Amino acid sequence: MLTASWGVNLNGWVICYAWCLFIYGIGVGGEYPMTATTALEARSGVSPAQMSNDRLHRGRNVSLTFLMQGWGQMFNQAILIVLLIIFHHGSGNPPYSVLSVQWTFRVQFAIVGAMTLWLAYHRYFRADYSMDQKLKAKKRQQGAVTGYDIKSFKLCVSHFGGRMIGTAGCWAAADFFFYGNKLFQSAFIKVIVPGGKPTVMDGWLYNLINIGVSLVGYYLAAILMDHKMVGRVRMQTVGFICMFVLFLSAAVRYDTLLQPANIHAFQAI
Amino acid sequence: MPSANYPLAEVDRQAPARKSSQPTPAASAFVAGAQPTLEPASHTSSETEYRHDGNDLDLLEEELHPADSYYKGTYWADLPRAGAFSFLPSSHRRGGRLSALACGCRPLCARAWTRAGAKEGGACTSFLLVVGPQLTPTGLGTRILYRPRQVCFLAVQHRGQARARRPLGHDQEGAPALMAVIEGVEADRQNGPTRTQDPLSPTREYFSRYVVPGMGMFTEGSTLFSIGNLKPLFAAVWPTCWSTHEICNRGWIDSIEYLEILGIIVGQILVGFEGDWVGRKFGLVQNALIMTLGLVRAPSWTVPCVRGRGRALTV
Image (cartoon, rainbow over all chains, first blue to last red; front, side, top):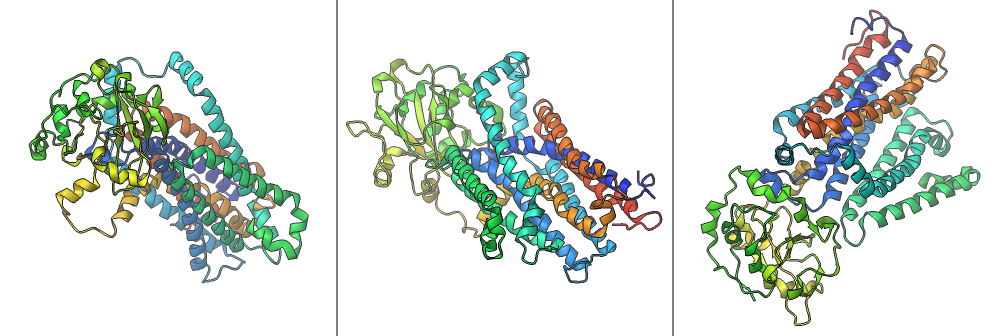
């Protein structure tokens, strides 16, 4: 593979990059259900360590585990900034040389790669899989009943169909905001940066703020999720209303906000 | 009114091999206000017998019967965290208030255990269990899972304290409407401090509980969203490729994100099944390995592509 890719032009590299991310995506895609289930099932295994733990905060377990994604983004952004400064002779200003960019993004991937390799080691040798034991026992007990058949599917849909549609719908709605925000982030940042011509570093620093704020949100959610006075439904409703108001106000008064006098308000949004 | 520490292990010892679909006669000992049928025994006697010895599956038989986790069709975690409901059979009908008890530790959550079929003789059909942090969730009357020594105490003893904090459920006579076991803090106090409190223990706990399981999400979040961060950088360095699309195909540049998402979809479906059919371990390890493969390829394979022939930058 290495030799084959020698001498390919930039376009070839883009293609390589895309396919590598495809492969990576398979791992990521597997990661979502597995992390969610393991976090849900955490402390429901049969090992002493798991059984002696708090098993009553499923929501918090899952959300704090998924929160690591936020820390990951933060880490990535921070390390990119630091590496670029290191390899760019201590300054974050353009123009960037090809060499320093190369080092920046490769070292960044290498660091994450080392961490992922450690993860594989940990999961293979160190992690607690007493849950698997339980699953096996369950299978033994249930015999041929696996839950993967038409009847269970029907039951599943009839019992949980509404909930699934509701959850997935909320998720989709939230993603409109989330990915809309992420995709047009550069456009927003271009607007809010004083001077009008943001460098890469400006964008990154704003992104860092964005991630930091969303981490606060993650933690608040994690704390309040299992609280009996708050709970998920209420929290999500409030969140949607807030996002609706903020995005709407940003959209309606977009031109007004673009005036230099009002730019701070927009930055806050 | 029971006031002593109950040797809960005794309950289970009487019926160690019972099938969980059968009623639990021993459960009646724990009905609020019912006479305790068991002598309080010393904790040490039961300790050896119920030491956790690896025979997990047998102990956890209860867990394999989800029916026990339901109260009138509601999963225990979905039961109202606070609110009146009655949970004793008609002979012992009392309005209870499901509420987290405070016992020096943070009020957490309550778990109701119902035992279908234990109605005969007015036996208690449900228990309320309050579980303290990091302590043994123990099925009172259904099955003592392990560490009976730590299961120490009944709500009755703490009624005053609990009532002082919040109105706890009582029936008209003022008898406790629910049986609760509070574990932990008091047990630790009774056993005496075994070692000095480690100031870093919350940190360690946080790491082992959330960070290590979330490590996959961490690396994934780091890499997945890096493309959004890197694109402006690439565009600044190779504008002819990344922004004006002179030498690179625009379709391929856009397809970076699409392929990423496509991979995610494939992986979700694939590993979703694998995790159930093969096992959690298989799925998790496979994820980490695939991600490593993708990462190793992302920097190394593409190095020569970018730098051109003979000018490879090895990382």
